Amino acid sequence: MGLLDIVPTGVITGDNVKKLFDYAQEHKFAIPAINCTSSSTVNAALEAARDQKTPLIIQFSNGGAAFYAGKGIANKNQQASILGSIAGAYHVRAVAKHYGIPVVLHSDHCARELLPWLDGMLAADEAYFKEHGEPLFSSHMIDLSADPKDENIAITKKYFERCAPMKLWLEMEIGITGGEEDGVDNEAADKEALYTPSEDVYEVYEALAPVAPYFSIAAAFGNVHGVYKPGNVVLRPELLEQHQKFVKEKINSKKDHPLYLVFHGGSGSTTDEITTAVGYGVVKMNVDTDTQYAYLTGVRDFILENKDRLMQQVGDLSKGPEDSTPNKKFYDPRTWIRNGEKTMYERVQQANSNLGNVNQL
Image (cartoon, rainbow, N blue to C red; front, top):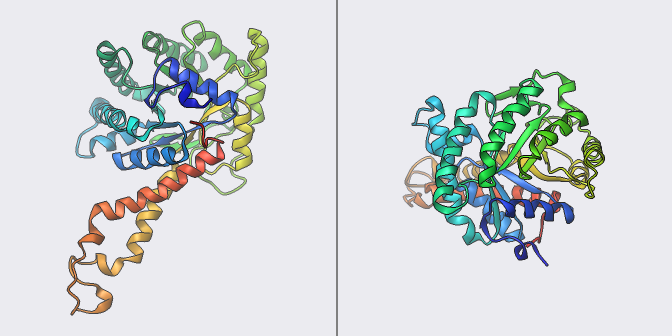
C-alpha cells in the first residue's frame, strides 16, 4: 500500500495532512518544505517531487509572498504579503493535482510583528472554507519564539483555536532558530535559546492537544538559518528523541513518537544529521537557502556560457561584427529561467533523497 491509497493528489488539508505525517513517521521519512517566491520556483519543486513520486510541502515566507505579489506593491499593513500568499496558494491549487502528488500548502515563519499577515491569510482560509468546506491553505506557522515562553504559548493557542474549526494545521516554534531569514534576525540570540528543553515542549503539547490534534512543533536543537562553514553550527538531534520520550511518558502514549516535529535551518546539514532527526519523529524539514543557490547556478552558468550571445539582440560577439544571427532563443526568459528550474529541480530531489522521501506514492 502506498501513500495515494491514503490521501488524494493535489493540495491536502485537515485529516489528510495528519494521515500524511502519520504515514511519514511510520515509514521513517520526512517531507521537504520548499520556500518559493514565484510560479517558476513552485513549478520546479512540484516537477521534482512528481518525478520521484513523493509528497511535497510548498511554503511561502512573508518576504517571499510579497515578492510573489510584485515589488511594485507596497507592503503597508502586510497587504503585499497577504496578496502574494493568496495568489501563490491559488496557483498551487490550480496546478498541484496535475502533477499527481499530494501537496501541503504552508506559510512560513510569522513573528509577532507579522501577525497581520497571518490574520489576512486566515481570513482567506475562512472565506474559502465557507465555500468549499476546507481552508485555502493546509497549514500556517506562527513563530513567537523570540517572545517570553508564556506569551508564545498563549498567543499560539488563541490562533490555534481559530484554526481548529477548519482542521487547519498550525506549526509553532519553541526555542529559537539562529541566524537570519527573511528579515527575522536571531544572529545575536543566546546560544542556550537554540536548544529547547523537553519541559517547554511538553507545555506546548499540554496547551494545544486539548484543542485539536492538527499541530506540529519546531523545537530548537541548535538549528541556524542559512549555510555556514563546518563547525559553526552544532546540532544536537538527540534532543528530539528526549522530547518524544518525555511527552510519551507524560501522556502515557502508545506511540514512540507522539510529537510531529519540524527541522528548521535544514540547508547545509549533513546527511547523518538529517537521517538522525527523521528517526526521532521529524516529519518536515525546511529547505530555502540551498534551493535559492541551486536556482541561481542554472541561470548563472547559462549566462556565462552564452555571454557572447546575450550582450546584444543580434550577432555572436565571438564571431565578430559580421555575424547577424538573432539571439532571441538565448535571451528569451523561458530559456534562462528554465535553466534555473532545472538546477533547483535537482536540489529538491537531493533533499527528498536525504529525507528518505522517494517512491512513497
